[in-house]
Length: 546
Ligand SMILES: *[C@@H]1O[C@H](CO)[C@@H](O)[C@H](O)[C@H]1NC(C)=O
Ligand SMILES: *[C@@H]1O[C@H](CO)[C@@H](O)[C@H](O)[C@H]1NC(C)=O
Ligand SMILES: *[C@@H]1O[C@H](CO)[C@@H](O)[C@H](O)[C@H]1NC(C)=O
Image (cartoon, rainbow, N blue to C red):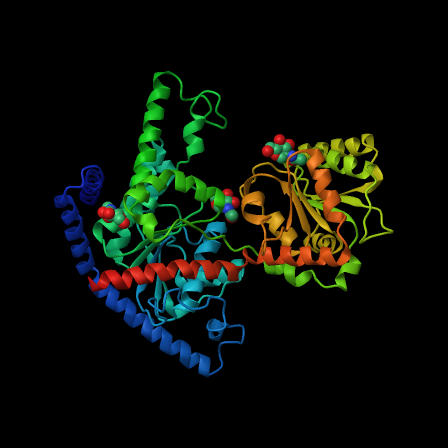
């Protein structure tokens, strides 16, 4: 109870400091930070000692040959990332502690893949650095977590320099703890959790990979010299959400902004958005997982960050999360010889869901076929549209049935293949044989499927919106990798252009597409991650000298 009161008063002081920012409060933060740092000094020394012993025994084991060849630790040098951008101010020998705030690190989702890939990239570039993960997963010890990372993501971490510190207050960030005012409640909860983290260990660089921006702000209040970074998957509150409260808006909160209650809710959300923006302006380095998220974060945090001069040194960077692109590139060859296996086939891999817009794609394909196109690369083969998707329930099955009917009506039945619940090898086999990849969804945030098309060397024809437009089907060396379309006619035109390419030209498009997919590999991720880490380390070194 006592601790809770302390935390609460801290939180109040923390918010006051945002709005009034009197020097007194700033110093109060620093004093608190100082005492936290002092009280965990012993733990820090113990941790570093443990790292040293583990490193030694790891090397001893390695010499005895107990660790198999699967260990790629020696490849660090050869890997990806190149040298420091500005003359080695982030030296390879940097040996500080990087704290990763990720209370649910054992969850095994996409967010966790980013965390582990980030740690691996950091370990490779700065072998002396120690990565510490603050987690609330008490049921898993280090060995278990690392094993799971290996099995689930095929990411091999170097055990001696990664450690876990266990938080006891994770329930404060669960939405069930805050049935009302959930956004604010969870953010306050993350402050308590961050306090918990700092009382375990104060890191030299503090990084949040789960969207707890408030925790970062608390860090910069307590420890102004510790650089902070956020990897944002999704904004906690978005401009879309705020707009959706107004009448005529869309989504679950549509129109709830009316009446007295609604007015209050609107006030609360706007207030929260301001708070979130103020918090965002304290963060030194911001990365987002896509252009979509970047645009939202920029519109919220941008003005506040400008005021604090955060954008003058480095802007908000897009660091795409790693996708298993290599699974495709290894399985699908790309050479003049492999071109012989391909035909004038259009591939659309997507679940049979309404928003995937299969209907429009069928109409586009019909219009394309009826225009009697010619294919210099495939003189004698008839074109085909192949729809691959999973059928999860009877609704999906009905949709497939209706799509078949539509194909019949459009008189293209014999040129359309439906492949339901295809296995991965089956999909790969189609990626080898097809020529074009299609995506009909509007405003898809990302589109892993389109990345897979590119990895397979398919020329993409995608809706002129969302991630496929902004992030994926973009130019390589100033030349296109696919086509953007919004109407059935434009799609048909895209198909005509793609399949109308001459053989040698077509191969060049395919090679560009594959190069484009490289940005989404683990290698691509590591390169961009390290670039941002370099900024953090340079800041850390500069501030420590002050
Ligand atoms: C970014 O994160 C959000 C939330 O997890 C996810 O919906 C989106 O697909 C991610 N974007 C990319 C490029 O992975
Ligand atoms: C931001 O930078 C400008 C010039 O680069 C400077 O005049 C101003 O004082 C800075 N503001 C803050 C808050 O540091
Ligand atoms: C593409 O997106 C637009 C909205 O920008 C939508 O109206 C259209 O139906 C979509 N086209 C196809 C073929 O999916």
